[in-house]
Length: 445
Image (cartoon, rainbow, N blue to C red):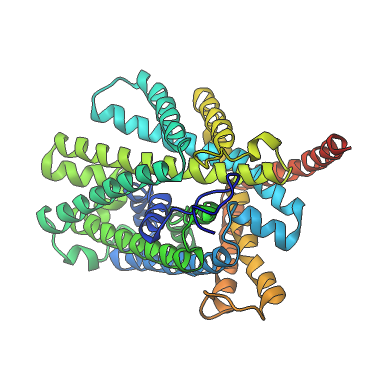
């Protein structure tokens, strides 16, 4: 369906390969790569296993991305995991995913990252801490306002800030590899202060995988991808490969510039690396880079989350008005407004951190069951030709699902309280689903 022939109640397919890849890059790269490498260094013994973990995490995530590429090419419509779960397993699992993610995790994570953006932005221009929340609220208002004018305006914003965040990472590479007074031997040298057992690799892999999260947002917006059967696989693969390259090279730069022990001891490795070379002005420049990176993530998460909410509304799983698509700009304006206002409430009340922690298990369960729908699609429609099929099927989807279940198990062991609350939130969705269905039936009578 082309832009010209599409119904005014549907989305316009305007996203090409490069815009799609920018959404993948922008959805994955937030603030994690500027902080998480220090946590991974604490749990490894030298640069070699540290880099191996980032490569391994990238390969595991790539397996999931390839599965999402087939799912998106089979069902190139808005909604992503929600849509796949609804078709494969029914409306209740789909609602529980939407309840957990679109109403809690998405706005909670946007609120958290918006505050991170505001914190770094205020540092960069020397504003007092009082301004952090107002700046975060202003950022959400601005992002929602731009996205009200459709995917073209939203994608321009995403493309701009994806370029800026890549420029920040490129700056790290130049400083770490060219200007820092380190040497490549720092990458290979063992760190006697960190002797880690083999079992600790799982604990070190967890933050790596979390830093690779966010690759699913393009599937949430699949209804606006041009020639989706060809574009989605290319954009997903190109974007994730670019992220893996950036992450590995950034860690090489940290190791060369700070050494493994220095990286493990750092609270803010990107800022420390820049400060070592350029002093306070270097830390200010990096603060601007991190602010750009986090702002770009917020833009993508708001756009993707609104598409999930809109799909739920169109299905009768949320307010019908939220399911509307504005006919002129072809944007889910009501869903954007609802998501934006709820995010602002979370920012002002400061309740977002716990919400994000409490829904982590639900998010990863959504990934596991979302990829598992691929087995259902293959069984139901395996005889139909598909423009893209995930290679090494069923090995890659099985490996990804097994990895995600391992992450969930490790999360439950490491943070049983947060994991338990995540399961409680999911369970609370069952009576909400029943009430909503009954209310919907009464309205239709």
